[in-house]
Image (tube, rainbow, N blue to C red; front, top):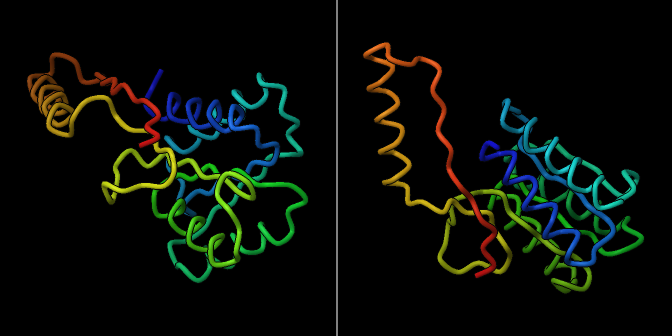
Length: 169
């Protein structure tokens, strides 16, 4: 299982356990192959939990804050029940938190947020985030080892596995 696969599964599992029934995935508008894997893992996990796919939507957004805020506000205003936002990054999670709170909404009651960002932009976080179990130094060390092997042409198709976990603090 790759990092994006595990990240998507952890995000969706926590979202379902939180009791929310309405889910929105916020992604960057420029998708990469890992984003497809993340989406597949989220959909697979929600499906296995019996979540009706009519309760799930996905938005691809640019990093222009005004556009992201506008879309989050539109989603929250039109929601018939509390919304759990599954965010590709802390950037989107922060936008959701700030926008919802500016609307007078309460975290955990009116909306929820989970970030799949892997790197905390701040040591203080008000929402769960999927984080690597190994340090960035350990990750880079593995990457260097793979690059060395590729240069020696020992194995040009090597992958690394970075274990992740959901952090709520």
